[in-house]
Image 1 (cartoon, one colour):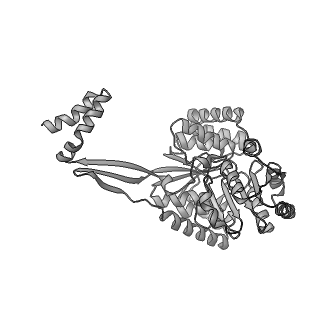
Image 2 (image 1 turned 90 degrees about the vertical axis):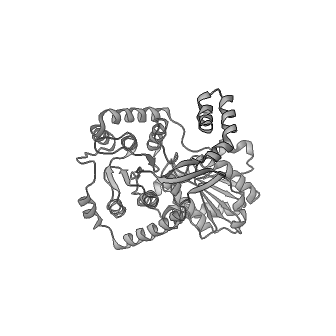
Image 3 (image 1 turned 120 degrees about the horizontal axis):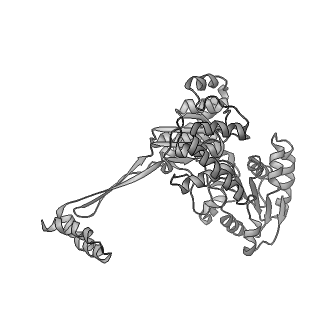
Length: 420
């Protein structure tokens, strides 16, 4: 990790640059994949999977019998861990369920807002370098809490038994398709994979680009979610072992992930980086984590306030406050996907079992996007019911505004009722 001192606001853009760039070639490849899937449906999915993933897929949808059979391979310990995660995710997301609005804005003018679940949602479950069981839980459980009727999941061609088990447990239809082609299939539908109402889930740059392109064609998405990232704020009293573990927990995600350390002590930075090297050598995914660290930085600042200023600019997916009295700084945080407060709040708690959602905006999108919540799986419908007296009380406003816009029929729709 490169160490940077005396950073100034005018340096933020260059120093805090993400390791990946917008790539026109990726956009063109994804555009062609979407066109191919829209034109040839299931055949395109099989052809693209063979071409890109080097896998022959005979049956795109995983059968119920196969799910049950594969589930028997899953250990009891893992099943119990999944049960704990599901219970906490369900508990936290159930508490987010909104209350309908029913009120009179004026006497005789009744307005209502009602929340309704989306009917069919598409869940993308990455599986390239690791089977992300947790992503399935983070998407499927809130969707079920909300009341979505059908859950469609796509994952690369050879899902793990754990994915089969979780899908069977949560009543999710699973399809053996990954990458941009999976997003295209869920967005526009094929003979086998039904078209969904909204797309959810993180992925590589091709998946993210496919979601963005689908969004531009009218298919809603949860957020642009690309390579994972974490920013850790540390001080003199931070535990180097804990901070190093947090940095590496994100570094092992992928070579295009990024970790940022911002600390108020040069000694602390040195101790943490020494510990990073020690722990790195113990990781099965050492090579991936090491390449990620080449894209990562450590920044020395003179105060926690300055560290949070830098974090707000960077807008990290995950922000860890590994500092004394961390809760005192919560109100200063403006931009972050999810925040972890104090030395006993590892980022992995949010990834798996605390109950919060780990599907979060990356790439700086935490400045204007939120992570997945129960509301992500809902839409709203407004209603109004007016009495004649209620209409009379706002008729002048209606008529005046309508005629100011040159819309005479709008004005007459109110006037005719009052003059009848």
